Structure formats: C-alpha cells, structure tokens
Length: 300
Image 1 (cartoon, rainbow, N blue to C red):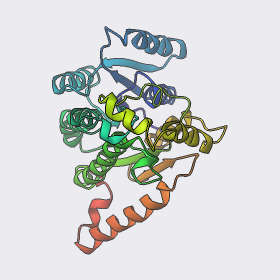
Image 2: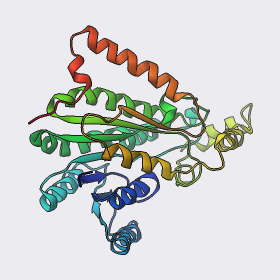
Image 3: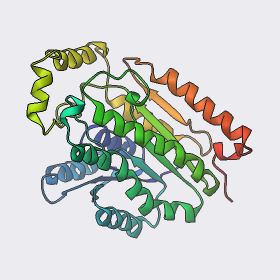
Image 4: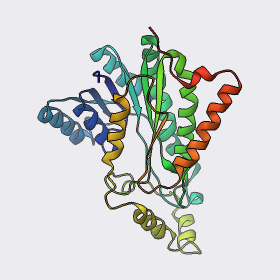
C-alpha cells in the first residue's frame, strides 16, 4: 500500500478522530482538520501531536472550519504548500439534532444543511482542482444508514441533511471519474456509543412548540426512540469499525474500491435499499450510453 496524503474533515472527535489515527497508523500522511485549533479545540490539537509522537506516525492537525469558505481555502492551501499534493479527501464533518421537526426553525434546518452538506461543496471546490490536475485521487463521503434505512422520529433535520449529502456524493461520483477521481461512500449505522454524535446533538429553538409534542400525544416518544435505537445495537458494536472500513477502502488499489460500504451492526435495512438504488443508477447510465462514468479512468 502506497503512502497517501489525506485530509479528513471534522476530525476533532468521533469517527473523524478515530479514522485519522487509524489512517496514520496504516502509514499515511493524515491531516486531521478541525476548527478553532487555537481555541476550544486546542486540547484536540495537542492530542493529535501527542499521538503522532508516541506512535511515530505522520498525523497533523490543520485549521479548517467547514462553515467558512475562507478557512477551507486556507486549510487546503496549507496542505498543498506542505505536501505538494493531496491524494484523498474524506468528508466526515457533520452535526446531529434531536427533537420534533416542527419545533426547529428554518434557520436551524439551514445550519444543519450548511454543516452536513454545503461544507462538502466548500471542500470540494478548494481541493478538487488539485486532484483533477494530477489526474488521480479518491473522495470518501461518510454518509448515514438513515438516508435509506429505518428512520425513527425526532431526527428529521439530520436525516434530511445526510440524505442531501448522500445524493450529492452520488452525483459527484460520475462527474469525477473521467478526471481519474474515485468515489467511495461509507454508510455507518446508528452507533449510540463510542462517539459524541448523540450526546452533543442540537435541540429545537422553539421550546414551546417542542413542549406541545412532549406533553401531548408524543409524550415518551423521545426516550422510546433513543432507548430503542440503543437496544438494536449489539453489545459488541464498535464505532472504530467505521475507521477500519475507511482504512481498508483507502488501501485498495485504484479502480477496485467499492462504491458503498455499509457498517451497520443494527441492520436497519439501508444496505438493501441502497443496493437497489445503486443498481438502478448503473442501469440508467448504461441506457444513456455513459457506462464509462461508473468507473474512474486510469490516467497515464
């Protein structure tokens, strides 16, 4: 396996931090990007440096706020300045919210879409020109089984945003193959342990509207939904398995990587539905004479 230069977003905690460390241990040069590296995430920056030193790996933190175009441009430019190229972009940054859909303001929905969807567009516009110029690369998208699997109540802003991100990933995939850029979509299930995803989830701004649900016919639904999700998760479910899957995908030879990889201990059905949807997509490309867009071109 060749050493690759990798940038991963949202790497201060959760899947991002786990994946950054696993990739570095696998021998890659990894930039764990995060915001506020000199502020609230300064301890995470120190932890990255300590891990790199203690394990003799090439792991570095880089300032990159996915909500800021200027910050994204500066972060990607810094990596290029230091390494000369980027081989892999991993879209991992995201945020969850929990509560009845009606109680979230439109502005809250927009914020969730900004973090989970528009962030990937900022990073792509900053990084893809370099990957296209070099004629090879890999874009990994960390999606969610919620985009097509079982969707319990009270997670609608997050579910909608992740579905939009997944759809964007699918569209980008075929628009990058002739540039020699490969795509792989990682689909984790609902890991309720091992990350701060649920613990740090946002809540509705309209507390009065939320109370109408919580004190009305939907009383008890939030607890039942969360407890039910946790109960579906096997005792041995390990959030680190997502990092392992990403390491495996990155390490595969160019042109052989799977379009999707599901890591879903709870088996919520997303793998079945995605399988059908991806076959329909492939068949459409064949019918319109663009079958070559399903696989990345190997550029000499």
